[in-house]
Length: 354
Image (tube, rainbow, N blue to C red; front, side):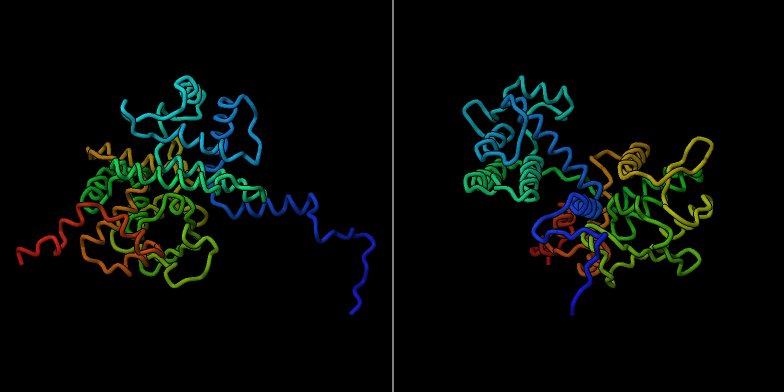
């Protein structure tokens, strides 16, 4: 079949990308990435640029040599010496990075943060199809040994406290019948009871995905999530919002008169509804309500998710059923949410008493 030649449409080169095509590819890649991920990448790359500029007195350029990555690791990872735990980042540089807002505090980075910074630099090289210094054998070996060194010292990642049933009930008791109180109660119960939704899933929840199945019972379709970023239609996408959670959501929708768009929104002065809440607002609501309830602990938005999984374990909910609600694909990941107090109710811990 002979194809027609269109004179007004310029022919493209199959081995090259035009500027328009390159921009379109970048737009699609950016749109397909979560906002939180993009923000974390930008933060990590800004830090790399700042550290490199001060450490080497030059602007960072890709590809970065592998000795530079090794220097980054020893600058930010603590090691055991006769003088205690030390790292190689000079105090003046450390202080400068903190004062400029690139670091939150003085001292070595948390191990997870260090690994994330290396991973972001690695992805930057992969995206540009450059030689990747993060894949150098010396870098990979140092990262592996560093992780083991931290583990031997008992420097485990700190986990947020879990908002299980009892503390959750305590913070719900602080939610009065005001517009803000009803919103916070509905938000907290929606996030917790529907399987421990992530804060981004809560703030992106929209009415078009919410179906009322009874006067105060709902089914929410989670069309997009961290574990289903392609939006695949799966049986577990439907998350029930029933009982107290459904009643709280019904009350919020009734008093707010929301019928379309974002479910959870900002409340401005005078009781006027604004735009959708930001993910950071969910964290703020959890912390504020915990403070009002007088609950002591390190709680955050993720405490709702870990609290749901921990409570499911306490009440002996089958793992498969709990995973269907949370959306986890990995059993190991779900088990990681179980807090130490869950093991206290384990029958295996009381074999001598049987």
